[in-house]
Structures are given as C-alpha cells and as structure tokens.
Amino acid sequence: MKVLDLQCRQAHVFEGWFASEDDFQDQRRRGLVQCPLCADDQIEKRLSAPRLNLGAREPVQPRAASEPAAMGAAAPQTLAAPAALPPALQAAWLELARKVVAHTEDVGAQFAEEARRMHYGEVQERAIRGQATPDEAMELLEEGIAVLPLPLPAAAKETLQ
Image (cartoon, rainbow, N blue to C red):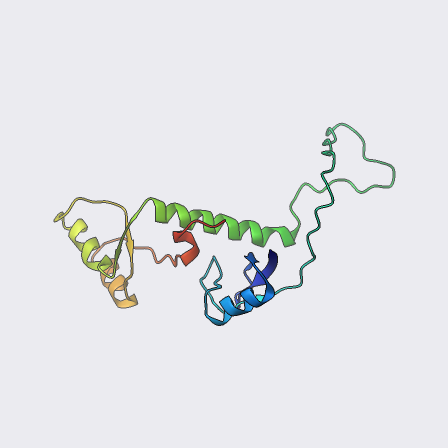
C-alpha cells in the first residue's frame, strides 16, 4: 500500500492510499483522484517521507505547566504552527460539508423551484440542498428567499477511509 501526500491546484493538501504508483497514475489519468475539499481533479504528488513502523514507543507523559523546561530547551509553543492551520481548517471544512450532506435533502436541479414552494407555503419547510444557477440564486434572494452558495466536494457525500 502506498500512502501519498497529494495537492490540488488550490494548494489543498491531502493524503491518498493506492495499491501502487501505477494504480495512482491510472486513477489520476481517469480523473478518479479528486481533492476532497474542492473536487479539483488536477492532482500532483508532493514530497513525502516513507512510513516505517519500527515498533511502538512508550507514550510520552506531558509535563505539568508548573514544571520548568529543561535547561537550554525552548518553552513549548501554545499556538499551532502556521503550517498546521491549513490542514486543520481543511478538516473542519470537510466535517462541516459532511454534516450539511447528512442533515439536508438533495433536491438536485429542482432547488430553486423547491425553495420557492417552501417559501410560499406550498410544501412543508425542510433543510434542502441542490444546484441553482447564479441567476436563479439572485432571483431567490430578490424574492426574500435566503440561499447560501455552498460548493460541496464529492468526498463530503461519501465515507472516506
């Protein structure tokens, strides 16, 4: 099993698992490898270190806040390093997208029509999602119907391993 660090054109970084390098290249050529955040299929490999399982280590006990740092050692950082923020934000976005998918009904291209029917009391209100053109979205807003453009990546609609 090959674990690859991947990146899309929008610089979203994610991990992919493939049977081999050939498997990755084949799936990439067929457009099957997509960014889980934006669904971009223009994916490139990033440099990544091999993963070696050399046995379990004994867990490190966290130092108490009142315990002094070792001589010459820097004080522990309380804020996340800037490099750690984008993956955390990416994970949070994907979690939010999955929650939206789990708690809404997909009405597809009928979104604008269904939103109007709910707004005017023709059908019971419920949480929906779907597709609308920019013009349809503007018309809904002009009618006082609240809509929120929310691009949902394909990965949010399925279980990832």
